[in-house]
Amino acid sequence: MSRIFDRSKLCIPYALFLSLFVVAPVIVILYYAFTNGKGEISFNNLIDFFTSGNTIGTLIYSIALAAVVTVVCLLIAYPTAYILANMKHGRQGLLIIFLIPMWINFTLRITALKEVLSYIEGNLAYYPFLNTVIGQTYDFLPFMILPLYTTLIKLDKNLIEASHDLGAGNAVTFVRVILPLSLPGIMSGITMVFLPAMTNYVILDMLYNSTYIMGSLIGSYFSAYNWHKGSMISIVMLVLVFIATLYTDRFSDKEGTIHSPSSAKG
Image 1 (cartoon, rainbow, N blue to C red):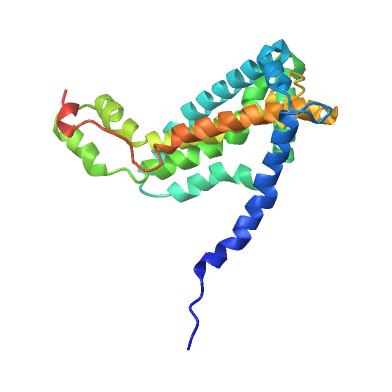
Image 2 (cartoon, one colour):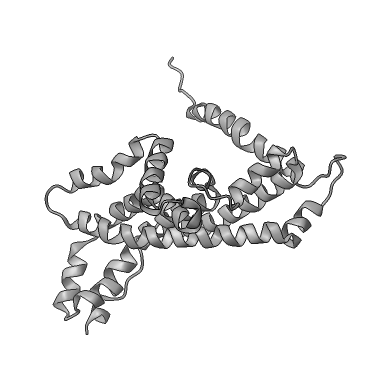
């Protein structure tokens, strides 16, 4: 008599991995975030986060930097992905051109970009914010192009033709049909760019920018063996990521919401 294999046992390795490398580290961070140097429960680290000018200033700077990088990536990636998705021939080859930088070591890419910017600007310290935006855009642009391309290539062309048949021009069709249908790709791209851009301090360091962002601030506290404040900042960032994920998840199960084709007329 053959035994029926219990498929539920296949999840054991995955559950162990999550327990050891996700749940356990989060528990450790929570412990340090809500305790003081004596191991006593304390909310001082949370209070300090929202009352410290240095922390709030760094958070605002990080959000502003990430927002600018995300907008620049979206403005470049959307028309690029749209053109690629509507090409009849050679789209795969051109897409690979945009993905090639991802195959090269990150340090080498930023070092090469640094040399280019040094040749153009001279002293990089004069334009720290601009250089950081350029560096992060160069690094994260493929992560904006890919989800947009994946969404746009699946668009139902019949809806676009129906919009034109009802008298809608290219602008109206884009706003009422194409743009809503591409919202899942837009939200996915924003998530993949905005959140890492808030914490990726390596680019700042390599491009001679001494300004802190949240990632470098967390690293500075841990380097100074102040695990309590560093852990609290990490928890706050984790909550922000969780909120952003909840907001974007509602776009994952639908292809966007569009008006009735009849409403596109005019």
